[in-house]
Length: 230
Image 1 (cartoon, rainbow, N blue to C red):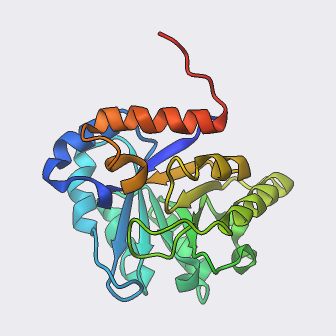
Image 2 (tube, rainbow, N blue to C red):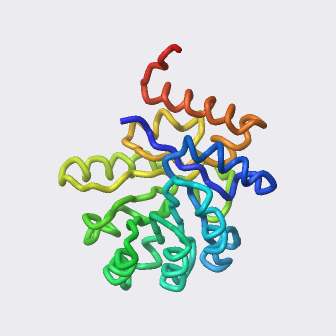
Image 3 (cartoon, rainbow, N blue to C red):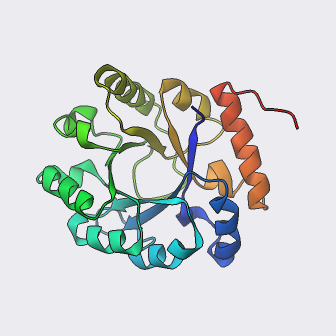
């Protein structure tokens, strides 16, 4: 299966948001929206209002990453704004994980969970079978442009092995430093969705459509796919 791509919208040029959404709408598999509260991480980015504003202009699934201390304060708002996937950090929900999962499902949304670099897969073992997507952070959360943490490749392998062994249906997604330096090892370990930001997409060419083709070619090459000649 061809690797799925999820551009991180906090890295886009917001002065050209309408044009860039048009480019992404015909190409992306997901649109990744980071919501940070300034507490769980020391940064503040996008919001439920941002989701509401872009929803009419894209058909692509909107994937919301909740980097917040209290996910239940945000779930209804992002669901009603138009999110398709809602993904809190495992560390923020394990006290009431089943209630949070059921709350997300009650709005008809898909459920993801995000694992920080130092959080083991065993942390989610009792509800892993309920998840639609698991996001492996390959950088510490909160800021774009951080260096890749190579120890996370083994975590991706572990998730792939569990999925194959038990028939789980979750997607294995990577967040952090997805670029030409890391594509090969991430895809070789079992990554299925790559979140691309500054180093993987938005800063590699001034024209976003051209940047997309450059990125797609690099990912396909890393996956061992041969480009079909026109």
